[in-house]
Length: 104
Image (cartoon, rainbow, N blue to C red):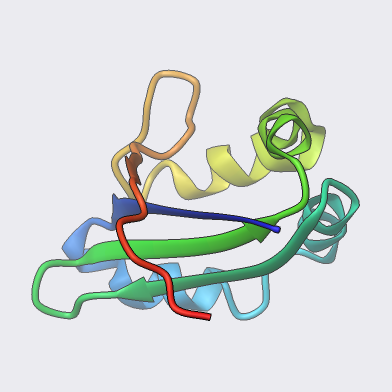
């Protein structure tokens, strides 16, 4: 299993809306993630900074990257682009984190 972590953020006035849209996410998006080898995915928020911390466990890096090309991912990005900083392709602005410690 490959562990990945990254940081995103949500515009402050949309924190409640961000949470609402994730409870639950669209079933088609959940299925897309699972088909592409996502086994565990969590997002946390700092109520002080509106910064999001995402942690995901994936089976394969190539399959993870292919999610970005799917119809449901693209629709989700567009759906979320108004409430969080986004790139020109509507993907969320995201900063990958490098793992420095892991305890089994």
